[in-house]
Length: 153
Image (cartoon, rainbow, N blue to C red; front, side):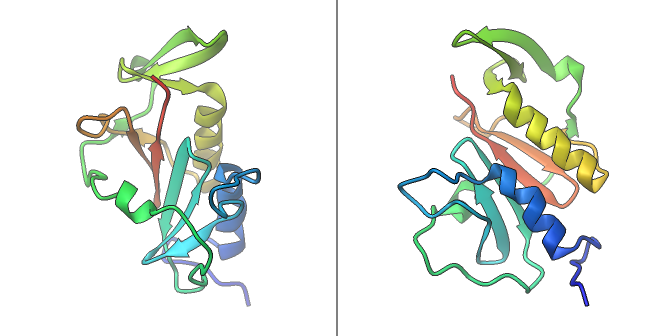
């Protein structure tokens, strides 16, 4: 029987939805697939980090992984608003189209598209908060998923 988490999502669905945020070419860490650390399952490629509460079905990773828990130490509990046009500004950065979120963080379209696809898959609207204090890191919530977008300057 297929296992679902408290949000009714199948573990196999979650793994598939997290995979686009992994880095299959990383040489520093084994971040080519989602992994469990503590109470969460993480996926990151160094630009976007996504986590969801563990449903108890994921195995703890024994391989070297980034300290993703530390990244989320300041993730806000509230203050989120819909990620809509008034928070996005088209710009050109490094000779490619990007978006500026909250007027100060440049984000490549591919990562915003991946976050919007995740939102569509789980039927939730992406919600964004102000960047973390003294940082350009943008917290985003998509239903049960907590996302840190680590943009370029």
